[in-house]
Length: 259
Image (cartoon, rainbow, N blue to C red; front, side):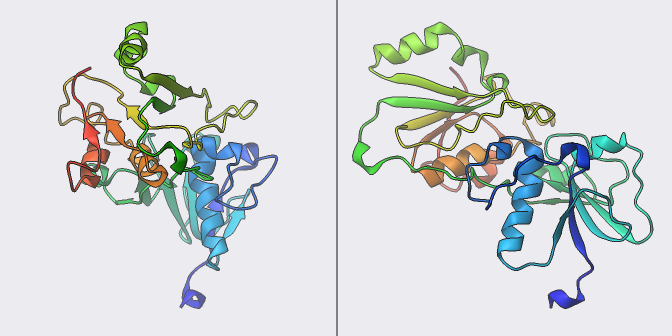
């Protein structure tokens, strides 16, 4: 069946081409800490490992199907217009749509209702994830946050939050990194280790949600929830559309609206 497919490419411009390549998509490779590689390279590696015909390229082909992360397309300064034999699929992530892409891949299912010709694909889970160690049994001591500091609610950065946890006999362990999509000089890859974690907290804001895109975080994926499930760790999460779509039981995660 794949013999009838047009050529399929994953495009990373030369300026964003990584110095080293992971051997597999399951490796805790530092580059997977930024969206360009977490989406484009990881998808390519998984399809290639399954024998699906596709190529990873640094030069834009003239024909076929090309998938590229929105940040990769910044190299063209919004001037790249696909020719008549090229289907350009933009992996949008949290960015603005690319004006000349015929299709967009989004990471939140509700965003398809707001963006024409967009299709939802769940974001990949954390490569190389280490599950909570079985020896911890029913211990409930270490509470963690995995993410960027700007994605943590202000109240959870205040010293009083840690003091409240300490008063309950709990330990707060935020695993913060400062990875930026355009800076590969000092990438942090510590988001994979849940072995000593007993629960995660991930709340961006305690402000009331509205139906607008920004407030309901309709460009955000449910990755923190997926990772918690795979790690065997309870998740305490904010009121976000991506999490709510995945929730079929009150026990899937705990949703909080106030500090």
